[in-house]
Length: 347
Length: 273
Ligand SMILES: Nc1ncnc2c1ncn2[C@@H]1O[C@H](COP(=O)(O)OP(=O)(O)OP(=O)(O)O)[C@@H](O)[C@H]1O
Ligand SMILES: [Mg+2]
Image (cartoon, rainbow over all chains, first blue to last red; front, side):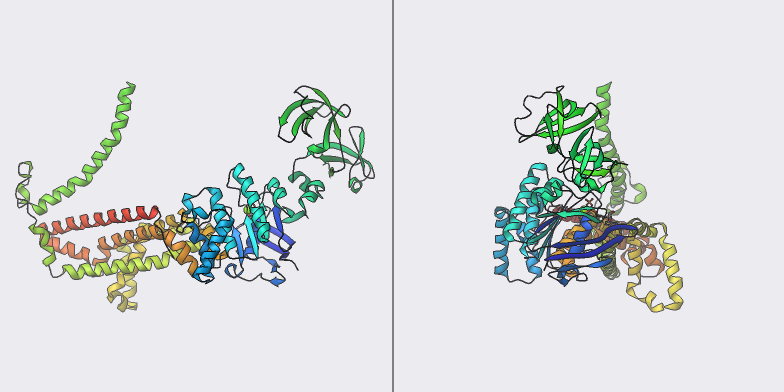
């Protein structure tokens, strides 16, 4: 039985459709990211889970119990918000204690639990501070401690990192994952940052316009996107014109290569072939072009190449050291590996 | 040329400040001379600025029979108006913010309407309606309270609204509810402490409106402090002016105290719950 289930949840605001029959099963202890562009309905899904919005139709269940009509304060869900949400009149300690007081937990147990939670988010020394005396990252950690203190059945995180700067984002992201796995809590994590979703999730639910585009592990979503939308949204893609030559084969500028699911198109159809930078290689043969940029990224190097025939820029991700001899203006060839490519109908 | 301009630019704000200070202070000083100098008014001039000052007139008003009853009625009316205003407007403003954000501009517009209706028109209408229909209402000591609520609306609603805008009510309410608090607890623990300073200043605005209102009280023949002040001034101009001066100073002092209080709140005095 799933820890949290959305069953055909539909939600409209006036004439705008926010969710179009959303169905997800979140397993016990699993972290699922809701990933998608702005306005695709991520927050709405989360707010329906928390009880702040009522679904037009469909149900939400926790361990098989229908909670669709249960008000938020009786749901036992912990939530962390995008904007800073600590009660400004209370100390860190009192913030974490808030949910325990509303539950009428005796004083000594409350104090024990608060201490435990603050230790978990490594903020024990800040217990008596107020929100305005904390950094953004610290505030979100307190918010996390506050949400976890009540031992919720589900943890809901709505872009908790989006207000933070890049460095803090990655550390806190990893910390959230560490805490989530150590507590073993079922979690829905909303983000529009694909890198964040790939790093933190057990499964990713890619959404667009209120619908699920793909629900799968980070590897599945990245390596085997089922739709062109997912392919484009998760990671970067190069776009090459191609023609389906029958079966799972396509021709890119005269070069034949195999591409999965090309057989969904009739032979002779013009398509766009979406290929990741790491599926392109710099080689002697291949598509001729000129190097326009070499961007060192630590573990790998991104090489921009302008292809002669297309007059189009592609980016090639080459492994460590392999691009050391390249400089801007060099003539190179670009090889294409179609194994993970996605075909999209050309309009 | 440019230094001359820069100097004028620096001087100008100071000049404006001095001019406005004089604009407010001179009438007050003139009243003070009239009230506290034992010199007939027609003879007051520059030569006798320092002659015959005495605080005797200051104590006169307190000996009047009507002083304490009218002051007490005005204070009661102020208290009642503050209570009714907060009771009505806080839930309304919160509701509009949380549930009807689109109606915000409209509600704000409604609340400034009393500003354009002259008090005399309002009170005449109310009297004309209630005299034949519900005389008991007009006879009540507190008949003025609802009228004052309406009259103070443009100030009080804005002040409460500003307080709500200054905090992220929506997120605080959601956070509190997700932590298991119902509406009452949420209001008491999460909202009220953070709205405190705006509620205090709104109450103060309401109280000053009530304590200074004359037209409505006079029309409905209620013996409030401003009506007493008016009558008393008619009978004894000098001690009447002295009383007006004390009222002015008292109100200013209150304003100062409340400003200090709200400042301190802004610095977040720890609240336990
Ligand atoms: N309270 C509301 N009233 C009207 N429309 C709303 C409301 N909340 C959301 N919507 C609409 O529903 C759709 C989904 O909104 P939602 O906030 O769920 O998107 P999101 O995926 O969280 O976007 P973002 O990444 O910008 O936060 C949007 O088109 C939005 O305009
Ligand atoms: Mg959102």
